Image (cartoon, helix red, strand yellow):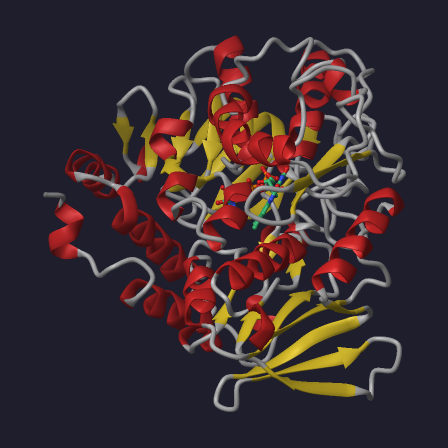
Length: 492
Ligand code: FAD
C-alpha cells in the first residue's frame, strides 16, 4: 500500500483541476507544486514520499545532494559553476562538472521535484507508455556532488556574476550555464487553460494534460479531430503531428476512423522544415486522408460549444470556427520570463544570446548556454542538447582554464517522427536544414526499427547515458556527435 493511494486524488482528475486553476491565475508556484504532487500521485511509493517530505521540510531549499541541509540564512553562496535549470542540458552539465570540480563547487538551481524525459510524452499520449515511466525524482537524477538549490531563478545579474532566486537568495558564480528550457504559454490562447477541464481538449506538451490525449481518443465518437501548431518557436517541432498519426492509427484500430475527420492546422507554410522529410510526410497524410491547413493559428477554444477558432495568417481577418470532438493543442512558447527580462543576456527574441557554434555568450565570456533557451538557430530538441553538450562542456573547460573556446557545434538535431504504433521516420539534420543522418539507409522511409529505437532504446540512453555522461565523450557527446558519424549519438 503506498501513501499516495490514501492521501492523493487519482492522477489526471482532481490534481489536474487544481493545476488548471493555478495556471489560470498565472500562479507559477502553485502550478509547480501541483505538478510535483501529480508526479507524486502517479509514481512515488511510500519510501520516496518520506524522502519528499524531508525535502519539503527543508525550509532552506538548499539541498545538498550528499545529504546535508542548510538554512536560508546561510544560503548566500558562491560557486565556481552555477547551472540554472536541471532538465536535459542542466543535469548533464552538472554531472560532468561536479565530477571534475568536486563537491561544493557546482550548484544546480532547479525548482521541480520531478525530472521528466519529455520525448516520452508522445508515447504517453498514444497509450504506449505511462506518464510515471517518463519521470524520476529530481533528487535521484541530479548528481550527488552538486548542491541542489531547490528554487526558481527570478533575476539574472550578469554584470555582478550572480542570480537571485524567488526566496531572495543571491547565488554568485565564476561561470554560469543557462539551461532553462522553453516556456509554455497556454494562456495566450483564449479559453485555455480552463478548457482542459472539458472533454476532448488535450496536450502532450504538459504532464498535466498529456493523459487526456488517450482519454480523448478512447471517448471519441464522431466528428473532427484537430491538431494545432502555434505561431512561435516550439520544442520538438515534429511532436504536434506525431500524435496526429498515432491518433489516426488508434481510431483505425478501434473501428472509428471512418467517423473521424482528422485535420492539422499549422502556422507554418510547410508541413515540416526539412524538404526530404516533408516530402515523406505529405505522402503519409495523403495516404491517411488527413487534411493539412497551412498558415492557420489556433487563437481560441470555446469549450461550451466545442469549437476551435483559427486565424488565417495570410489574411488575419479570416477566422475559421470549427467544431471539435477532439482538440490536441501545442501551446505558444517563449523564452522563460526571467531570462527574457534580462536584456543584457538575450537577443531581440528573448533567447540567451550565444555564439551558435561555441555556445559561449556573445558578451559575457563566463556565461554559456545549452538547449531550448538559447538563440542557436536549430530545432529545439533533446537530441540538439546531446549534440551541444560535448561542444559546450569542452569550451567551458577551456574558458575555465583561461583559453578561448575552439570547439564548434554544427546544429545537429533530430526528430523521430513517429507515424503510428510501429512506424517512425528518423529525421536528423543540421542548423542549415541539411540532413545529417546516422544510418546508411533512407531515413525518410517509415520503419519499424526506428520506432523501436525511439520507444525502447532512447529512454535508457537518456537516463543512463546522456544525463550521467557515462558514454565516452569522443562518441556520444564529443566530436562524433557534432558530425553525424557515430552511433548511437542522436535522436533522443
Ligand atoms: P528542459 O529539459 O525543459 O529543462 C529545463 C529545466 O529548467 C526544467 O527542469 C525546469 O524546471 C527548469 N526551470 C524552468 N524555469 C526555471 C527557473 N526560473 N529557475 C530554475 N530552473 C527553471 N526531443 C527530442 O530530441 N526527441 C523527441 O522525440 C522529442 N519529443 C518531444 C515531445 C514532447 C511532447 C515534448 C514536450 C518535447 C519533446 N522533445 C523531444 C524536446 C525535448 O524534451 C527538449 O528539447 C529538451 O528537454 C530540452 O532540454 P533543456 O535542458 O533545454 O530544457
